[in-house]
Length: 130
Image (cartoon, rainbow, N blue to C red):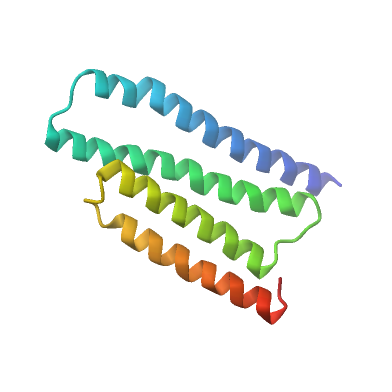
């Protein structure tokens, strides 16, 4: 019981941390940077910084989801872990693509990892290890 409570608390804290991280980053860092009018070169740097900032939140949420599954005595299956990995990486790919207007190749690597993990999740479900 204590372990489930601890895992549940950790999972909720992971979600809350990600939310606060993204919201405060937007309010205290990125809004002020945008208000000071970045040049095109600075905007590119700002774009990847913005995407990476929010990517940390997304990855934290994926881990938080796995912690919550463990807390609910629902040990994540291979497919469940792969879905969390795929979702986090594909969301990250979108963030990097949007933040850099496709100019930073990180979105390609994140997309490939996400897609391969998604294919592996489908295979895990088909194999019955879901």
